Length: 166
Image (cartoon, rainbow, N blue to C red; front, side, top):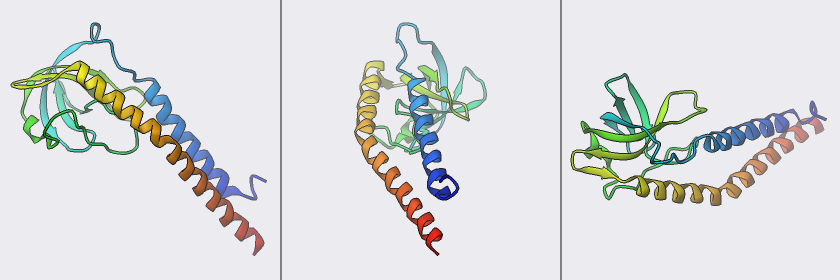
């Protein structure tokens, strides 16, 4: 049976692994405790409207990618925590931030939970609220992703069935 519907099984396996990976990555990267989180000196080198939102330098080390609090996902999201969604006003900014390393990613990436940089401030509680809102929105979208996965596996099944009938 597995050999008979090879493409459908392969596609189902790949989608299972992808869903599982992103669910595990989000579970391994919870909201930090503000009282125990480490504050670091950062410099914002580059900004992007979509995640990863920032290229930062932490304590004068090598540049790394960072995002404002959004879920770990294969999709790229905007961050709406500032009135101006064009984040170019952050370039060159130097200040203090609460950042956490995002675990289970193939590349080194961080989340910025709080930022105090010149006259720009992102409060921890506001970032936490934005993160929870974003996460809730993605949970509501999960059934749509699952339906699309089932439809794509069904099409692969039909493809294999059609090949078998020839």
